[in-house]
Image 1 (cartoon, rainbow, N blue to C red):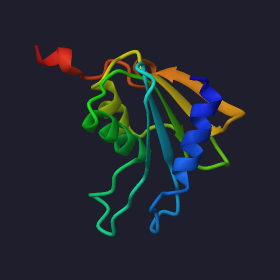
Image 2 (cartoon, rainbow, N blue to C red; image 1 turned 180 degrees about the vertical axis):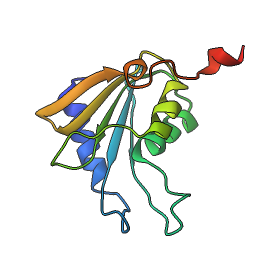
Image 3 (cartoon, one colour; image 1 turned 90 degrees about the vertical axis):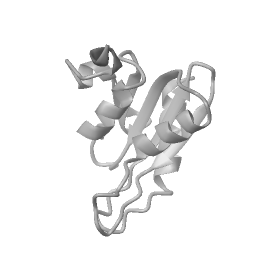
Image 4 (cartoon, one colour; image 1 turned 90 degrees about the horizontal axis):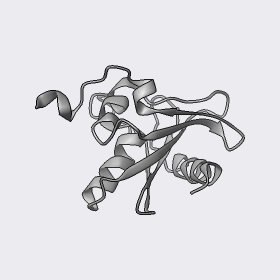
Length: 130
């Protein structure tokens, strides 16, 4: 899948955000090696702790549908600057592979590409429990 198309899909997911407290909408789109796409948006809660990020929503949908072969994830927040996954999301992404490509985007023309290992060097993963 072309990176710009995945970013566009994440931008569409961002519009479904429930973010009445921060007013910071985030959308994510997960693309699997088997060609499936799963989207997510951030969902806030008045008590803050139960708030869930777009990346974790999209990955949870992916995993709950039986797909664990994540190839890349597009993350789009503000249209003023490139958005990156938070630390909790980085840890969550790392769970499913160190080579997952992360498209950190402002829009389809302004984005940076990393692997999750670059964004979370020396991260704690499943192999650390062996």
